Every structure is written in structure tokens, then in C-alpha cells.
Image (tube, rainbow, N blue to C red; front, side):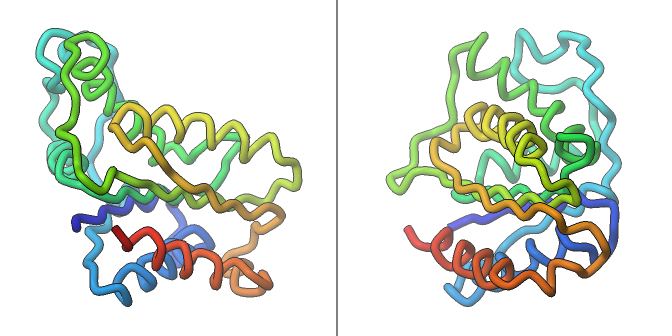
Length: 190
């Protein structure tokens, strides 16, 4: 089973990374390996809306997204972990998602799809933010849902934590680490 994870936080060792690492620990306890992409460290140009992918389903720009495209195509499980900034996913996460416009073109304009897998592709979305209102989570989750649908991940689970802002504050949350660890364990099962 191929598991990939996207870390969308710019804050090294922050709440998002702590959550993601705990989910990955659960996956690895199940005997699976996870390929982790730290989006903040990658050279990814924002989508230029140039239309270059409309006829082929392939982006015309050659940067670090090339390795992400290959990983997404091969993945059985996809994890997206992002802080919530201004009711949305982080810029790092959103740039990666926007560059998946080429998959959207491939799937919806060119009517091609990812090969079916007997155990279905599954996803996990991890969100954490300082706000206390659910609207931030709802907006970020809507974007992630569109991403998962575009890359043919028909089923995903969302775990979100509000009112968590200071670096490392998630460690004080009464259930977060246990929940994401268990989510990682479940995600690794066929």
C-alpha cells in the first residue's frame, strides 16, 4: 500500500506537524511506510491558469509538483495536514491543490480517470486553527473535499481542532494525539 502525506504548515514543529507525525506513527505501526511532502520546503509555482493542461491533462510547468503528481497517481492513501488561516487551508497547501488543476482537466474535460483499486483510495484531512468558530473548518474542508474528489479519493475522514494556536499547544489537547494516531492505524488497513 502506498501512503502519501502533505504537510502544509510553514511552522516547523508546530501543531499541524505534530498531528501529522502522530498519524504517520499509526500508519507505520501498521507496517506501512509514508512518503511525506513538506510543502513549505518545496519549489512549487502557483497555478498560472494558462490552460496548458486542458488538452493533455498534464501541467506544462516543471517544478517539484512533478514528484507530487507521480506520488498522487500511485497512492492508495492520501493525507493532507494544514493549519487553518483566514478560514482556509494554508497557502502552501492551496498552491499544491491548485496545481492539481491538471488532474481536474484530465478527469472532467478529457474524461480519463485514475485506475480503480480493489480497496478504494482513502484520505485523511487534519486541520488545526486558533479560531473557535466552525466556519473556518467548514471552508477549509470544502476545498479539501474538492481536491480529494478530483484525485479520485472517494472517502476521507476529517479531524479538526479549534482554539489551538500557540506552537505545541496541541500537546495539551485531551484527545487530539490519540485520535490522529488511531486514524492513522485505521487508514493503513485495507
